[in-house]
Length: 420
Image 1 (cartoon, one colour):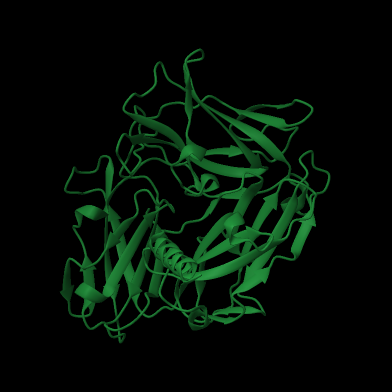
Image 2 (image 1 turned 90 degrees about the vertical axis):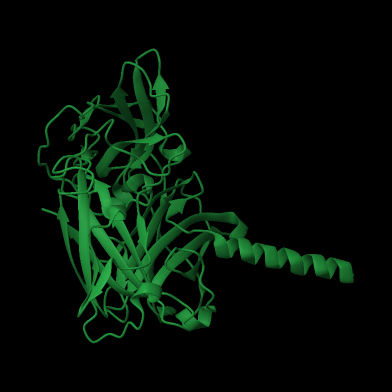
C-alpha cells in the first residue's frame, strides 16, 4: 500500500511539472468543436483578447459543437507567466469566486444544413472575477473530465502602469526600404517604479497575432532619463510581408469576394476559392484587410451566431512543382495562427497546385500562404506573398513586470498599433 501511495505521489509531481512547463495557446483539440472565438462582449470591434483590470469590458468566449445533442461542458481558469507557462499562484490568489464553472448558455442552430449548438460564456462574471493582471488560459472540457479537453482559450489582463511609444521604419540593418520592417519603441515609466529594468522586465512583441515569429525581450537596448529604449534591435526586424488575402462566405447563393463558385452535394456546401496567385513578383499595393482576423456573418441573418451555416472552403495555390525544402501552410486567425497539421497544405501532382480544405462558418476571412523551411520555427511569406516594408501590419507590445521577490508577471502595459 505504501509503495502504491509513493507511486501516486511521484506521478502527481511529474504531472504537475509537465503542466508547469507547457506553453498555452488558443486552439481546438476536438474535431467536432468549431469557430472558437474570444472577443469583447457586445462589441463589433476587431481587437485582440485583452481586458483592463477592474475595467468595464467583458470577454465573450464562444464555440460551436457540430450537433443538436446536449453536451456538458465546464471551464477552468489558470494564471500564466509572461511566457504562457503556468504561474506558481494558487487559484485564490488570482480569482475571486469559483475557479471552475459549467457552460450553461447555449443555443441550437436555426435553419442550417449543418446542425450545431452554439455555446457561450463570459469573463469576468458574477461567479468568477479576475483579481490580478497577467496572462490567463481557459481549459474547456467535457463531462467534468479534464482529460477530455476540447479547447483552450487564452487572453490577457492589463493594469496600465506605464506607456509605450513606437515606430516602424523600413531602414533596417538588413536592407533599406525593401522587404523588412524595424520596430523601435520606448517604455515610459512615468512615476511607476522599476528598480532594475535589465532583470525585472519581459516584453513580448507580436505581429498580426502570430506566435511563430513572436519575440521576447528581457532587457532594453539602453536606459535614458524617463524612458527605456528598445531601438536598433535585430530581434525586432520583421518581414513586412503583404496585406492579407480575403474571401467572403456571406451567402450560399451570391458569390462573395474571392469565391469562384458554391456547390451543394446534398450533405455539405462547398465554396471553391479562385486560384491564388504567387505575389512575389508584384509591387506593393495598399488594400484593406483585418490583419488576419475574421468575422462571422450571414446575409439577412438576425443572429449570425446561430443562423450562419458551415461550408467546406477549398484553397488552391497553383505551382509548377512543390517546394522540397519545407512545407506550405494557410495562416490566419481562423487557424489560430498555428503552424501544424491542421494548417498544412498538400501538393496535387495531377493539377499542379497546393490544395487545402477547411470547414468554416459563414463570414469574412483573412488568410495568407506561409512557407515553413525545414527545421525552422518561423514561417516566411517571401516565396508566396512577397514582402514589402510599406505593408500595414498590426504590432502588439506586452510589457510584463516581476519585481525582485514577486511571484508572478504583472502585465503593466499593452500597446497595439498599425503602422501607416
